[in-house]
Length: 127
Picture 1 (spheres, one colour):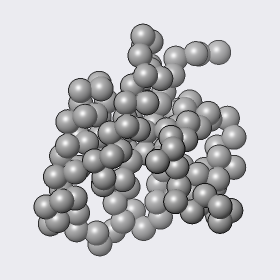
Picture 2: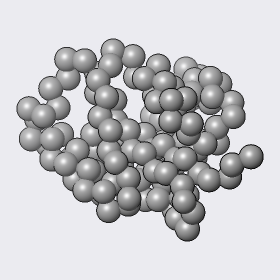
Picture 3: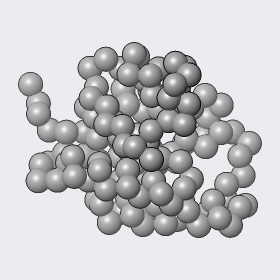
């Protein structure tokens, strides 16, 4: 079995997601692992037209680059399925996500991903 970590960090358009990228970097540090930073923008969202959101993504792009990762921005109507597909296509072994604001609802994206990707380790970073 291959023990090289393939880490996917899921981010939003907030500068505070820098902490998630740093956790991902620590997980691959000292190995030949891969670090992927992923943001899914909903179809129709005009994040580049918003100076705050565009600035945040540019900032996170720089943080990802410094961490040795590429920042991938995907467009989709279905964020969950897009993240699941990315994880499967890239043979991800660990996922880093921020704590979901709807964690108590029982229907948040983290719980859905954990159920649909049982072989992947999840690292949930508190707010």
